[in-house]
Structures are given as structure tokens and as C-alpha cells.
Length: 282
Image (cartoon, rainbow, N blue to C red; front, side):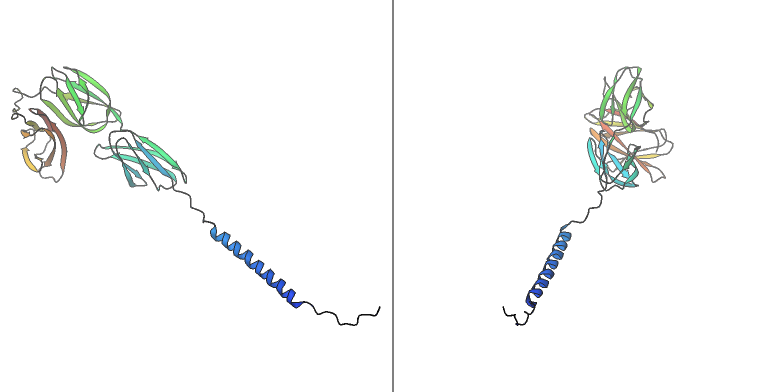
């Protein structure tokens, strides 16, 4: 067999170039896929801030404070969700400035925590010294609370503490005694229901169908009593005045002579009723 004297075949340069192109394309596809996966991943969310649900089981409203700021008002018999609280140890305050009451709690909150705090109006004890010969219904802030025995002392437990309007309504007549009194939380406060004013007490009789506030200045400065924007009485210390009003609930605004401050008091009148009301000072 004769030897093959033909020249060797030249290398297939087109095949090598195609191979390199395919490798480059594969590398590009892998890079694009990696970039696509990276872009499709959502950034990690920061930890959620804790919340606190305030459960108000009382008949009073409470302002809720945290970190020195008011975060909302918990309405009576409802819940308030306080959001966006910082983490760590916090002091949460519930206050009612009208009632002059304040309560607080300490909580430790972590990211995402959902804390709960139940609040209620502090209780007090009321001792009613009834000097009337008949029983008297005791009403606190417009809500009947019980009966005080005639010519005796009656102790009421669990009454709502704070600044309250007390009314004693006699069972044998329209005369009522009303006063504003601060009931100390967790302690006993005494209140004397004096005999109903009448002929002996010098209280006038209201016109038929009307009510009458038999007012007394028990403070040590002259006062003016304004009702519905109208001046109704001026009294020096120890003086009395009669204020005739239609039945209903009225706000008495007491203005102090020589002082810009004033106090506000609520009085409820029934038809033909005399309400014995005394202002005790600012």
C-alpha cells in the first residue's frame, strides 16, 4: 500500500469559534438568571413595632400616654389599640383630668409584641350620714347607686373614685341635696345629708313646674354664678341665692371676683324640685 502523501487537514477553526461563542452565551445566560433571581427577592422587612391594646372596662374615658405623649383616648366600655410604640421598658399612663385620677403600668415590649392592659376606675368607699327622717336615694354622676337609711349612717362600698357630683333625693319630697366631692381611691369619704330646706331653712318655693337651685357661697371670696351665659347670682362668702331654672341638667359656672379662674358644676333639677347646692371654693 502506497503511503498517503496528501497534506494534513487544516484545523476546523469554525468549530472552535462556535464552541467559544456557545460558552460565552451560556455564561451570559447564567449571569442573567442569577440577576433575575436576585432582583425578584423582596428586601427583608424591618421588625414590626409593638402594639398595646388598652381594655377600658369602666364607665369613664381615659387618655393614654406613652413616652410623654398622648396616644389616644380609651372610651367607656371599649378598647383602644396603641400602635407604633418603641421597644424596651415603657411606663404607660391612663389619666382623666376631670376626675383627677391617674393610673399607670410598666410593660416590656419586643419587636412585634401585641401587649394588653386592662384598666378600671379605682373604687372608693362613701359613708353617708343621713340626718333626714326619711331615706335618701344616692345618685353619683347621674347614676343611682343606692339608698341611705333615715337618721343613720350608711356605707357604700365600691363607688367610683375621683371628682364626682353627688345627689341625695329624699323619698318624701322633691327637695334634693347636691354637692361636688372628691372620693379618695381606696379610702372612705364621709358626706352629710342635711335636712331638706323648707320653711325653717328659708328656701323659696320654685314656680309650678320649675326647679330651683338654693345656692350658697361656702368659700372665702365673692363669686358670680353664670348659667347659660347669663349672670344668675352674686354672693359674698356665706350668702345664699335662689336660681330658678327649667327642669333638666344645667352647668353652673362660678366666677371668682378678682381672679380669672372659674369652676364648673353640673346640677340636675326635677319639676318642683329644690336643689341645695353649696360652692366650697376653687
